[in-house]
Image (cartoon, rainbow, N blue to C red):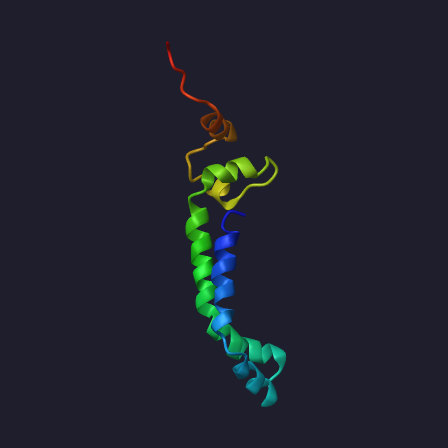
Length: 105
């Protein structure tokens, strides 16, 4: 959920520089919609899709603590299955965000 804005921005920027005339030319030459998409459109927007994928992977790879907080006990995310953060529990994450250091007077 945290990386959706990054993915949307990078992937939606890619079709903006795509010229639809190429797709129309393929359709006029007898290509089906699917073939025109996979052979004309997709190769031109691939850099944006790859960039969005890389952003999503890099930004979400380090969010193990957040994955512990968001996921319930019945489902396990990939981070929890890999046990990357040495068995952190959601309790530790909650306490670390809500507690403040005490000051002695």
